[in-house]
Image 1 (cartoon, helix red, strand yellow):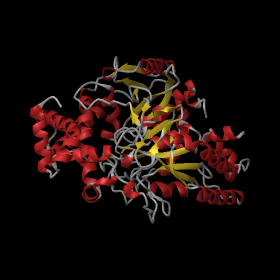
Image 2: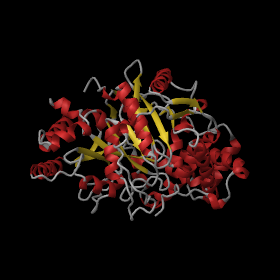
Image 3: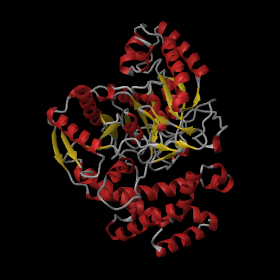
Image 4: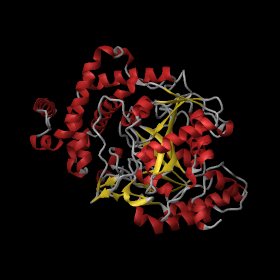
Length: 471
Length: 63
């Protein structure tokens, strides 16, 4: 493999070569670190690159594999973490000046599980400050640029993770999602982004955005890689009481099981006529692919999803403002202006408003559970537009304020709100070469079906194999 | 902001929460979006589940 081929290979392609000792973890990590040194000055995907630690860990992985101790498919694989996962001995900034010098003494559960699986931490990725925003234009650590067009945003808040994976700066990255922060940057950057079920992956040791909405999940270059990373990080954790005790399946086992006869619902009333033409066309073509693969595709109605945006906004604002109460009082000037304003605006919410939004959330989730008795998964556009320009350091991303209406932004926020699993996979490109993303969403704790549908689509189309032409 | 009554209600909420006037001026647009959400929620109230059924993690998500 050439250096470029190594940099863009998937875990599923690299792991057998590492296991058979045809490829050295040291060679792989060196290739990725060299690429970061060359390209990250353009992209600004990383806040911290842990090159010395990565080289040491690669050496250790090489020795273990040589001596017959192979830990599994992540052994020797270079992975980055959004800079809100605690990393013992490595600074964790949350993308904020407030934590610019914070060096944790312990790992987040996700960090620890990845290390135990043999993954090699190559660095901490840029994010919208405290994961509370959607552009990854960060006043403290700079703007992350989209590998497909450096004048476009990555979206956020996991923008650094999406850019790193898209540019071949590491094989996978861990992001987080409170509203859309894994799937939207995945769509804008042409990679896979998986938000698992609420309770599937521990949030212990993640800096919180909103406690009842936060999810941990991977960004990868393929659906099978998302399954491999999820298998490594999922499962109960006594230090996150929201984690489920139910068994964790092997998420890779049934990927190739096919989707013939599977029932796919399209919440078409929420997006028809309100998408960029490129997105509209890509979704229409994706639906034809699912039909050709033997799935039974039909329209479904989700009237209560009209309220997803307002429920999500009120809950998120109340929880984020509560989480930042002390720093807002003691260090207000250390926040970026947009995040400070957003946190202060949350002071307008009363306890009664918050509880009413939580009741609304339950009401919306009940409808979704009923719909998912009639179909196996939902398919919809991840986001209604492709990546928008960065103009003078400000994103031309004018999301409408949350309203009660059928619309794609309510769908975008629905799955983190009700906690069900959803994955975004590449599904095409605009005329000017910007990626489009498709979301597949399913029943709580049924990531296996979501992954199987996404894998079938990926195999049939090959969109995920495209690389940013300039890199 | 085009709705002076909404503006007034938003200011009242933010003042009650202790935010100084110069900061209220900075955040009034964002806060008004939130208050519009809150008022839409209030209109829905009779249809929502009883408080005993407020959000809990998905079944099985608690040990």
